[in-house]
Length: 152
Image (cartoon, rainbow, N blue to C red):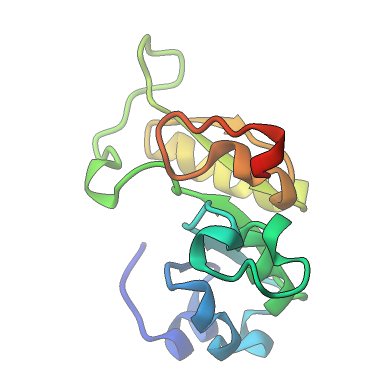
């Protein structure tokens, strides 16, 4: 069962916690209570897009990668970053249905990605493997996001 909660409440009781805050707020997240939990980061853009490109090395780091840095004992998965919440299907389509929606996910921990892929399936969506958090820029929040190598 999913529900809205305060940050402290979600960290305490949630098995899977969704983080949908700007990267500037990551430092205020409670790292200790989120340790060992799967944390979904719904932002798939790069740090450059949030104006953090002046910080050393952040011009090549994804926002989910920054969240993983702030929550080193958590299992961050970039998911739901290419779809508005209102368009997540609630009725779903069974696996194998022609035209079934597919959503990317990225992460550094295969077991955590499997948990989110199973969640996608329960919602009626196929999971598209988008690689590691550092590779997540390829499936950013725009429907078709193509970047030249110089832009990365």
